[in-house]
Length: 111
Length: 338
Image 1 (spheres, each protein chain N blue to C red):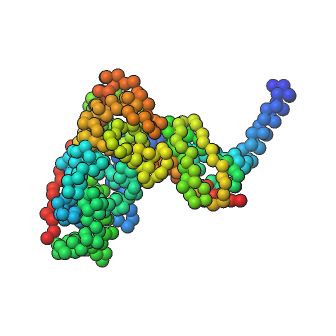
Image 2 (cartoon, each protein chain N blue to C red):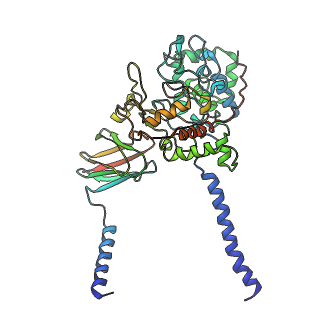
């Protein structure tokens, strides 16, 4: 291994460590849907953030909320597909999958 | 190396190995997702006791729980007909035909959500719904309670089941729910096969189970020991007249329009005709429906796609479905209180 390639690997590793250790950047939060459950129980976010829901199951899921602070229906979508929602107001948003009512999570939105 | 040391060197790994194997086998036996638990869960405030189950059974078979004292819960949930009624759709108060089929109550105690449209969450919530529904038993709960209080024989039954709580809508609901928690599927040929009896089901049924999970995609919704995801899907049934909005009435979301709860497949051989509107008489007709990917494509569930099953594959699927039916447990009708 040449000194140059060794340095490149070292830099890459440092970058990877930094990326893992840094908190998720505002507006870039992702929640998976796997094994008929959301991968996050309670998500903390700010007004203006965008939350992405990603279906990792073999079957279709849905995402909706009828909460007072913000309601939305992102519809149903297949494996590998995503849906986004931009958070517009502070409060607690209760999120469910309409297809599988046992799937629930919350987004706690602050200013 | 001493014999003692050698023995320790060998025995420790062997002990660990056997320990792991033992634990692994126990976990594997408990973890079979296709075998149902021995008992249905019950909430802390309504744990099962023989007295509660007995009270619930009396109420379940008592026609005095209906306005005209002409129909009981068992009129529609008939144990002789797979705890359903054998009709395309239910017949309610004054012999009026209702819009939806009577779902079996077998294993409904495992469901976290009740009714075709999920409008009730627990068995206790659900239990008194049909009693007071105008189209079904049509007896307002206050009237029901007064009527039960006027039957002397019921007082001791309620007291034994729920000491000090009296005859109320709450104790009626809890009693009925307790009885329903004992209505469970019996061991089917499929169960015996899963437990190791290779001769319990035919080769056709075994292949049908593979198709069920793979090519036919049935397990996408009919998953786990109760063969349901407890979810809501629009499977594209043909309907006549005004469409039934189903779950949409509870959750006004586009994907829920025409969606209904996935029913159990346990004891399915006992509960024809099939589907929430009773539109198919045989399991082969049901399989044909899914092979077509449904008929009415309006707001169809994304999981519904044409399957291109061969005739042999359809036969295998039916053989598998039939293997989910056990021998019905004998039910001895109780003498009702007077």
